[in-house]
Length: 393
Image (tube, rainbow, N blue to C red; front, side):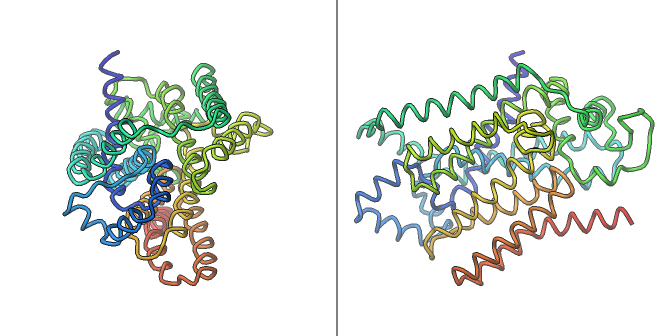
């Protein structure tokens, strides 16, 4: 039991955080809220900081200057990178090697270790900034929020914990489990990738419709390395991870929308939590997918991937010009890869959302040059859609 929990912690918590240190080097606007308020109070210090920010991430890396980034944002970015790396590795193996699951397990484990180590070494300025932030809070004292703000955050946390508790204890079953969860179990038990029909157990040719969406294979990977059954991974483990992760993104969106005001951000989380809890008005709402089909790719797409696009756009278009934003562009490209990993249609929907939103914002803010990196970030979507068309034909 201890081994399973330790491996699950390393793969689902430690590795994503370490990998998230890489893009965090150039994710302006993601410093903790108290840090942003401190900078606003000390304008002279803020001016010097902005001059350092304009040096870009390479100067930060070479100078090893501390970079202050919210730990929650680091983890969210790292988790998306972890999924994106798996998609890039798994799809070629799925297409080329019917019994290639052991190859995926070995190669992906090595890649996680290497990227985590690279994140710690290259992203050391972020760790240094985190240590300085903690030291500053301890030594200088933390400005206590008002009692009303604390109550709001406690209510928001209670709603999130309630959703996690219900998802874990009730373990809702869905008709699509006959395919998605069964596919994870088959892969873990037989090492065969999308060549066995979950409904009958008979062998078949490559299931092109689902082969490019490798989320069930990732769940099989978690089952293999942890020793936990794939069905338990899907129904019990992933809800405990994806539900709070989604609220982390909501929290960062709220921080941006309300300019770091804790009370309004907490109220925003409460409203979102209530809408999710009482959103089961049909089997097709995003709230139903979020709490009752958390482990499925469609839920990952509508509740996390598309939400991350909103988060990224809020940051990209509200930061001042001249500030390095390469981390956000890397995160956007990784998020588009995860969209294809969730469901094949996700590549189209994510690309469509980025194209429409980016075009409107580029025209409104007179920033046509931003269309170039936006188009580049959508290349993974185009590649996976082209691969699907070729395989189908």
